[in-house]
Image (cartoon, rainbow, N blue to C red; front, side):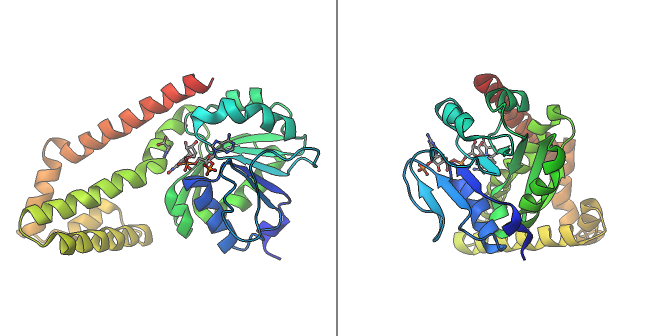
Amino acid sequence: MNELSGLGAIWLVGCGNMAGAMLRRWLEAGLPPEPVTVIRPSGVAPAPGVRTLTAMPQGETPPRVLMLGVKPQKLGDVADAVANVVGPDTLLISILAGTELATLKQRFSKARAVVRAMPNTPVAMGRGVVALHGDAGARRGDVETLMRPLGLVEWIADEAQFGLATALAGSGPAFLFRFIDAMASAGAALGLPAQQALRLAVATVDGAAGLAAGSDETPATLADRVASSGGMTRKGLDVLDEGRALETLLVHTLEAAERRGREMAAETR
Ligand SMILES: NC(=O)C1=CN([C@@H]2O[C@H](COP(=O)(O)OP(=O)(O)OC[C@H]3O[C@@H](n4cnc5c(N)ncnc54)[C@H](OP(=O)(O)O)[C@@H]3O)[C@@H](O)[C@H]2O)C=CC1
Ligand SMILES: O=C(O)[C@@H]1CCC=N1
């Protein structure tokens, strides 16, 4: 039996871009649709066989797992209804950016365990990242069973670092998509046909990421292997490295995202 099928009833409150990507991967990885209930205002079924409701079911046994997948700004709208259906056996997982564990525990005090999870969209292919924070206690195994098919799973012990992990891995795909666009635009600006430049950029980032992920060598060493002595690549690397230009840009990028996470924590407290 697939280990996902032993988790019991799973309710997803909100199933948009992110929770929808997680659900697609879970179903692909062997989660049967029958124990899954999705609650979303549109009532659009995310997949065949998944029970989809426009409001929280009433009078049912509390779910074993309830995942909050609404926007942080909607937490106040759903919190009372969620608190009413959470039971002492419920593992509550929140993917809300910013919203702190203490806020969740205070709102959902009946839950057996409360865990923050921060996925990214490549989980849809099983090649994402899920950062986790919380004390899942006896339900830690269930959390890991659920998250493992999505990609790399990392517990973040100190919640103060969760915003940074969110900026790096949760938001990270967006930053990399910009990088791909920037490489393609640069190639096009210098004379390549735009569509061809985009194809070259996408395939290069895909291949390089795969190489970095599968190699025992550091990205710095892999870069050195590309940069033949006296060759072209070194001249390009010199531009990125001058005054730590790329690194400085990314520090500012992560700082800005992390700062917004702290604001969102305050807004949902
Ligand atoms: N997008 C990303 O890459 C990541 C997002 N997150 C987090 O995921 C969460 C959702 O983001 P995202 O998926 O992008 O947003 P979406 O707007 O795509 O999804 C929001 C979902 O919430 C549902 N919803 C809205 N109001 C209610 C309500 N009252 N009751 C139940 N469901 C409701 C919507 O329903 P309907 O579909 O019917 O309109 C929709 O399914 C956020 O908290 C975000 O911080 C975390 C990591 C990465
Ligand atoms: O932009 C956001 O707030 C969320 C967090 C990580 C990705 N999306």
